[in-house]
Length: 414
Image (cartoon, rainbow, N blue to C red; front, side, top):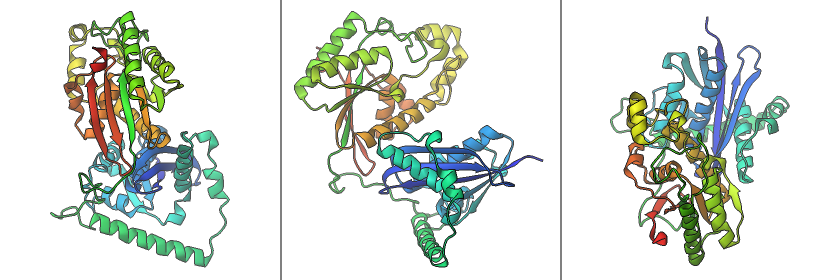
């Protein structure tokens, strides 16, 4: 008989939307032992999105332990339990892909969903709060720092009054979720969206000063004019003489504008050299962010498109037609890079709220940030031009909306 594992998951948002995080734990059903934990700060998001992300993380943690197991999911979110059980529709665009991702981890016939009271989901709740606490100080949750298991085990018994208060709060929360989702059956033709979309356009309230990411692609390397694949899995080339000139010209232009308040760079050499030229001109330090690195192009590193077409035609065709296809030899798919980039974006938004920050990075991360800001499909990555040392800009508002302000500006190089 296949093994059974219990997944308990939770997510929260301090503001809804606001700084958000999730937590998940995989339990042995016989002993109650915690077999695996997962938690992460995800930047600005709603409660529902955080809960779905917690579910995905818990299922992935269980799959890593035993891909053949049967899974019993227990959550205190009536919305997620009902939607994943197929009884409520999922219409909100932020939750559809997360639900699809959750369904892809295990076959549907091996996963069951159960609603539990909040008081019985304390372990996952504590993990989610640890993640949000870490995000508040610009860090990510680390397993070695977690005390969720100890705190859960040591929790004192609840008084009857406290239990009654919790139950009342849970009933109110469930009713709110039911109202938000419309409490419709999956075959209803007119179920409203589970969470209202954020306001868009001139009717939106004053949301304060947005965080603005000025996106700078690094200057040229020897590989750039030859249009060779140059990602994070290759030789890590330095700037060419032309690239250094581009970096200095960009630094002068940004100094004249006088709006940059911080500089963050990919760890790759060409970006760090470009970022340092700007930072020196502005009198700022360079902060290196691992999540801004370029795609790992695997065996394609250093090759031209024509050379890849000749050597790996089937792999290239797959890559061109699906964001989930990876380059030959263990490279990264665009879907993987998008997940990494989104996490990095949210982390930086939490750190630099209301500020203008220069992100010195690469073609794929910049195009991905633009694509996500526009809500464009993955194939749009192939429909953008992004020159060496070009500038783009995206503003991010507190309601979760983003505004593309600039794309592929090279006027400072003329």
